[in-house]
Image (tube, rainbow, N blue to C red; front, side, top):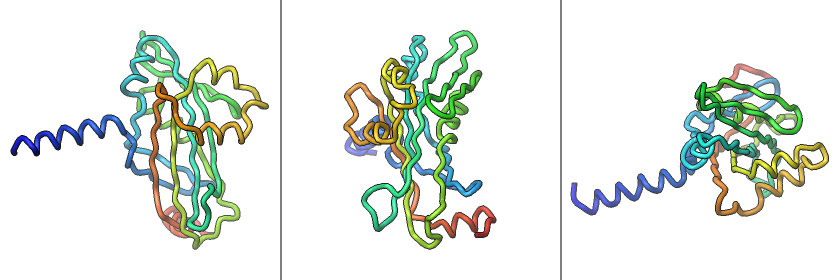
Length: 198
């Protein structure tokens, strides 16, 4: 391997570290007339975010799952959930608190379980979605200021317009952001793979 190949390899590794979810896959499934996803390769509890947790500071994250059809620029449907994650230095385990409705807290979680819990909370209803229409799914996650997130944890502040705007604006320099996609796919194919019929 020559020096140019070595340099290229180092560059690719560096880019992968900067964009940990740049091209990571989602796995979609149908459950109770809702589309749910898992992101087996999602690793957001790493780097500066994990360092903040290990220093005793909670971190706030917002997640959005959206469905886009070929015939529309805007999302056909979306679900957004927000969480505050903390870390117990003694037990070396994470706690995840969901903001808004429905609220809830889970504790004593490994990093893998905490990451999966956030993604598992998202679901898109399939009512009205044609079985033969092609669509893609997009998962987005971004960090927030924990104080700002806690201050907006009222029903009026958690409006859909406010949450959509959160993902529409450019991330500030101190905010981490991750994305992943799946598709194109069809609802009919998801029904077959899950053994469901109309």
